Image (cartoon, rainbow, N blue to C red; front, side, top):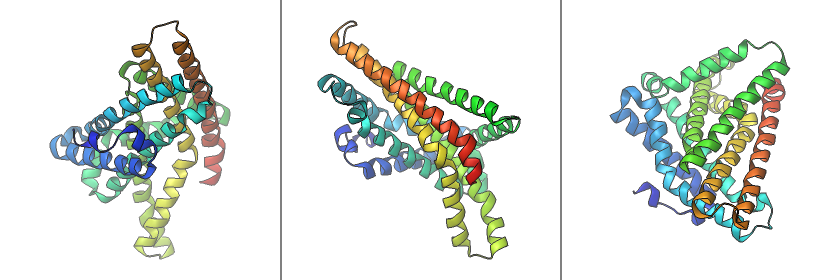
Length: 281
């Protein structure tokens, strides 16, 4: 109960740096505990532990967001939920940073074991993408796959309240493994070819790897966050309000707008991933 008592939804929404540090703490503690206690299954256990630590805070945050839809129905969608989006995004980024740093810092045997499932997922995705022929078919495949993840976010949030946290934490661990692997794979070769110092090489390659995934990754994650908030708010509304009331109709309209916005952002992210990211990197 210690981790969940570090802050509350109102304080968290108005202190972004605290949320980012919480994400780093949740990811770090989860990874170390998973390696210590469940070494063979650490790659999934750390995702479970990190998401579990944030569940109480997420539950109260969704309840707080649902109240906004009722108390301020005339205000814009982004006005009502912008702070929640920033909260989710910074928590996600904090976990992703923690996983990336530990992937690079840990000895290769430990990091390979801790991120075994994530590395296999990345390998499968790369193999699948390589088989695509045209940019149009690649765009369609990436968009439809991301829509499937978005639907899972809505479904998990609807059924479990804060359930989308598990999917978001899983994505943070996959991105952490991808960034860490990119740094390890390119740092040594870059340092040898340019003659730069090891620290300088780490800095350059780390920055490049973060930019490579952030260009399309941030809007993609924003889409998942919108979907998670939508599902969570709907879940809260069903628990606290009867069907057919004006309050429920207002919440349902807000949820529909969030889902539509999520799909739009997801399509933009797919366009960036297919046409912009390869041109830059």
